Length: 283
Image 1 (cartoon, one colour):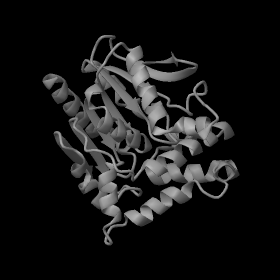
Image 2 (cartoon, helix red, strand yellow):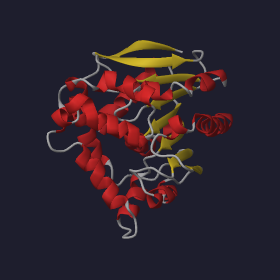
Image 3 (cartoon, helix red, strand yellow):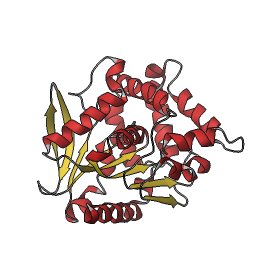
Image 4 (cartoon, one colour):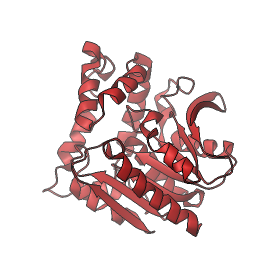
């Protein structure tokens, strides 16, 4: 596994790369306030299983791919980056794995361009139809959870998030189940004003997209969610199947929060490999 710079147009994306060229491609998109290092414990197993893996530091996180305009962080732009990376690898069809905020992008891609995907895996963030069903449920905690997501980046956030040695970011990592080692690694990237501003552009636009109505996904889909996730409710998780018309598998992880892959890496990798392998055999 090595980190390369892949140039797409005028931008350069840092990408963790593993596995032989020409093997089935898996693109892994990290969550917000994380980097491609969130996949470091899973990539070797995927490569060993015969996959080519590409895990980019996404637009705004890669220093050479950090436009200043907010609209440059829209779903369409992010989807364009994914498709361009696949084209760079010389493939027309690939597996897509996403977590958290990047799953919003993934759901939109899977719903609008199913022909480019062998399979889709979403971690934590459910299909928008599931989120909307949970928001309509008076017994659900999803309304309060969504308010926390919105408030996190309000009120002069670019200054507030970095104040007192990035105390709010440190508290976020701790509450989300990120290890101290990983948190320090992420802070080396997000502890800078330019990176936080890019994140805020992404966060603001994706928040607008979060509950947007989209078509059902017609791609074999795996959805993994931690039962102690502070951002997405059990109602939202259990409604996720309503957004998929193809094969759908749902895995709930007990005693796990938002960072499913970090908190239970072995089980996560096992479930992911079973999904990828099954869809590759039927491709």
